[in-house]
Length: 87
Length: 536
Image 1 (tube, each protein chain N blue to C red):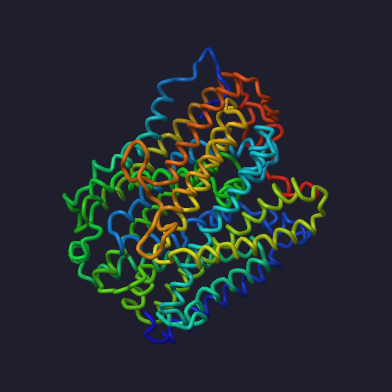
Image 2 (image 1 turned 120 degrees about the vertical axis):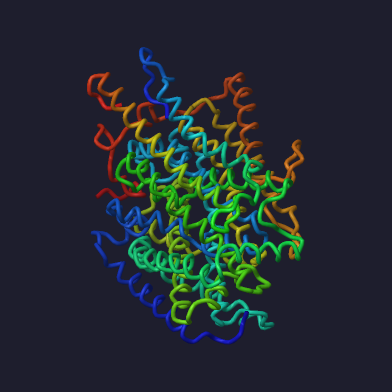
């Protein structure tokens, strides 16, 4: 994720923190098995354990998409600041 | 399971299989390149595939016998514990997003085609590159073995040999047929065959998935009934359950994490990734992958449906094919079997070709015959792809086929040990090459010995992939424990070696290479041929 370090702009920016959070969130949610190892509440007859994880497929996708968009914007901003040279 | 041959299903199955095989042979002529004897042509499909063909190929890697047979079988046998495959695939996206674009950039800047190439260029170490190549070859074999088991399960349920027959030939006939078809068709047409066949296969698979996850639950009276029946079975058997017990949660989490870290270390995953046109394509594709995970989750539930439908399989791998045979009209069962069979065949072909390329490029050319001609390279590659399959066959014959998911997990234990050199190397040059090699060795030895020591009810060794984590006391995935050990050794030795001023080796990459994109100076969109000898 690290690019050519620019001292004036800094490597850690609020946008990058948000990107990192988006990418880390699925790990926290999925590896904390105790938080979802239960059958209730059910959804359409499917125990919580299963539909919750399937729901996270969608959440994780959304988070990755947000991270992708933010990253693109971040890169473009940096490129234009540097005077048009890509990355 | 062997209750006579299901004629209609078998006929439909054979029809699709023949169609696919004919396509495979025709594929050898499709968009024919100038020189069919170059390794590039056979092993990388000439590298002229567009984005959408690449995308289909990547899809071909994902829907394998793992999805269709192994994961639902694990659920059928053990319940919730087998569902770890879903969090596993969820964790893959942020990982891909983080490191694959960097790998794409540096590879396209320096013409790397394999992970070994990168490791050698980054750390200037032939030894480390060899270690990565050998691991890739070894780890691919059990993964291919899993595909063979998938094809075997389908043939078995259709009544083509197999069953509890005492005659070894009849009993192993499905396996031998599976092996024969795979070998013949990879040998003759290389990667072109999988690419073309992927279209047929994915269409079949989507139809079967859609029908299976809608039609079967309705026929069984809804998910309520399905889960109630499943719960009753686990309670009666005192094994498994609808949620992992307290003691199984570490196992669940470590299996998910370890598998996710391992996925993109496999030679075949890297081949597919590097053939995309730009680094942005990789990130964009990441956001589409979840469709696969969702399907995987729904297919996994088939394991519960098999229980509810009253499928009694002594070998859990047969549960899903048997469910299809019981629930569907014969002709559609044939379609479903063809989807599973071809769905196992294509990835197995892709895997064995990727492993063969790895051997030819990083072992044969680097260590055995540096001045090999392109024709020789192609010959060696084809031969090795065959040997890799023989290796896979050995795994099938010596390991417990009733827990096929173990094959993939065993491969994961090994391939995960290349993670520090590859991903570590993508982000930092801090690690010392010798430390990485030592860490790899420790991880490999620990992982293999630990896996060897796991007994299952049916065999004394390699009976499972989870074991007590030393120092923590919980049961966890051996691959992840070995990986942590690997990293600790690498870090400690790096400090020692740096203090001792051991030679660092030459790094041929520069920091800006890792962020270069298509269009930047020096970035080749089409990677050079896998062999240095050909230049077209």
